[in-house]
Length: 306
Image 1: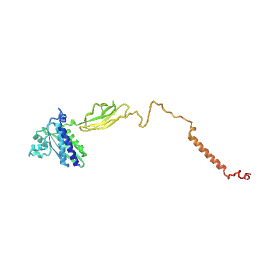
Image 2: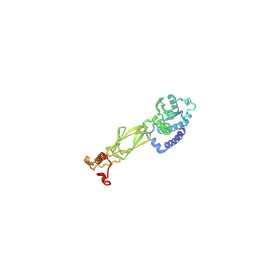
Image 3: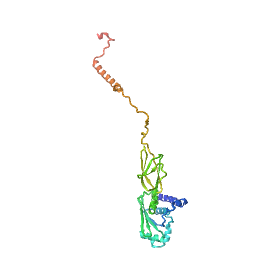
Image 4: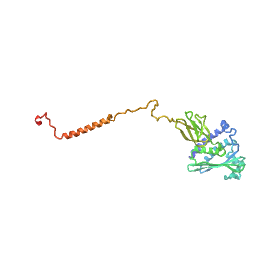
């Protein structure tokens, strides 16, 4: 799994860095009001029971996400080590006061520190944000145990960056796709419009949401939708007509109902069959009673019949 994680993180990190350097991406991410306007430094993210190379790649991805949020370039680990020189702060155990002192030495407003730990096949990311000015902890993030798949671990680190410094921007979207016009759409019980919607439902908090789509003479559509970070979840809605017969049944409301002809009970074929069986049985009984002696053929021997 470690080799797979290293390979996946290398590819995702290259894509993330390319995205961050693209002019249109930078303009979109760093538009007025998009950055938090504070300088941030990452002290270190320790590896607990996990390959240090994996944690280094995760830290690089984490830094690139923070740069899009903060605006100014974040000092690299080499730059941080060079700035601190042989200061005793290099042996900082990670407490709040020590991290604030590191932030003051680096000339930043906020400092991030934490670790990524492995327990069996699961991973946990723990990070905290320290404000340098008053030596206080602003926020702490601890993920749920992750399955260890590359995609899940990478997304957890990206989400952690936003959760630490800009939790209000942890959003996703849902797109409703249906060919029915005029259906009522509700999300978490709140009406959001009628189909077709003008576009995806944006600005949604991460996690599970309840979606319902209803229309007259149609069976209601209800489902749970998971909203993911910076992604649009597409939901295809097929509303079924409630007034139609089951599949395979042809129904024409213009035709009159078919009435079955009522016939006398004695005209049934079963009655005739019963009478025939009874007649045969009676004949057999009579024949048995009359036929106790041998049969004599008078034609062959007339004298026998005298």
